[in-house]
Length: 197
Image 1: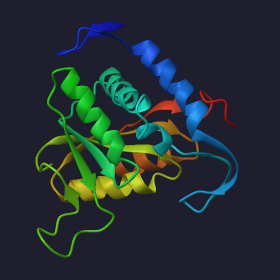
Image 2: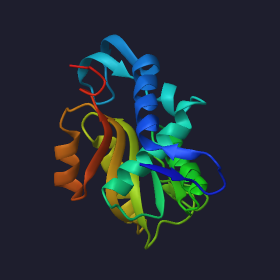
Image 3: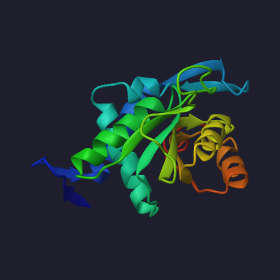
């Protein structure tokens, strides 16, 4: 499917975006070798998606691929974000991709803990209260970071429609998030898509 975005004379080729982002993830983000993940689990590879979400060519692709993923799943939302810091550039990419499509989508950042000063907020950015949102993450192993973000957004009055990640490691995050949060868990790429075992 090809569509023209607002403010851009270039047509968007979603299949080409998806293919190129997959190539960049394989080339730039997959690091092989024994690593300990944030969940405490060990793995034979690490997917460093900040090498993608903060990279000049890949970041715009992330926004377009995640927006297409959410559109294909019929997810209705007006804001996107997640737990700092892995989700921050993903939310920003989605916000910018939406603007290119002529859509108004805000981004938000979820702090790991509520601020003890100022306004005492845990969810930063435009208010999520009463608004439909998606919680984003670059990748998830156990689903813990995404669930922390879901809880914070719900406490701030946001209506979580889905959790979406760039890469799913197939380590139980989908099942855990869907059972705990009761929302769909979507991913753009599986570890199999990236040739990882």
